[in-house]
Amino acid sequence: MTRSRTFAGAAVAAALAGAALLPTQADAAAGSVHLYRIYYDSPGVDRGSNASLNAEWVQIANTTAKSVSLKGWVLADASNHKYTFGTYAIGAHRILAVHTGKGKDTSVNRYQNRAAYVWNNDKDTATLKKANGAKVDTCSYNSTKVDYKAC
Ligand SMILES: [Ca+2]
Ligand SMILES: [Ca+2]
Image 1 (cartoon, rainbow, N blue to C red):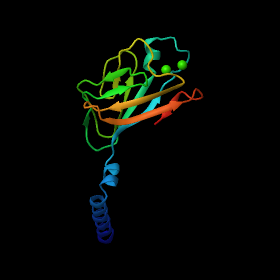
Image 2: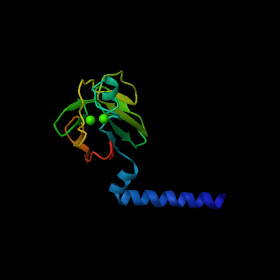
Image 3: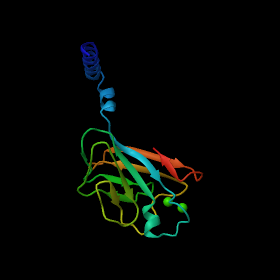
Image 4: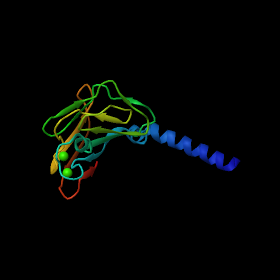
């Protein structure tokens, strides 16, 4: 026990030293908020029902150990249809879905409240920006063979 604990302590010390020397790697290890998946062709024929609109969504993951406020952040498609987050924070290690249709916002489901589809079924690009306009992430797809894109 003592030996393994000492070994673990040494490993942590080494990791911290490495993190101090390589901040970029440290940031990656600390996680990020990023686009995770886009389900762009909702199941079945696109008849425009609210259920169908809500089966079209974009997932955003927070892989950091902290809750992150997304207030004022903007999710947009290639045609610049924008969804701006209100007061909202994504919890640590959580994945949220931004649905296209109407619904009641929850801690992991947000709704654009649209009456029409946003994400093209053939190709499109999702862009996530902070309130100050700084780009956080983009995710593009170009295929009708599958219905979703893992970013
Ligand atoms: Ca679509
Ligand atoms: Ca469909």
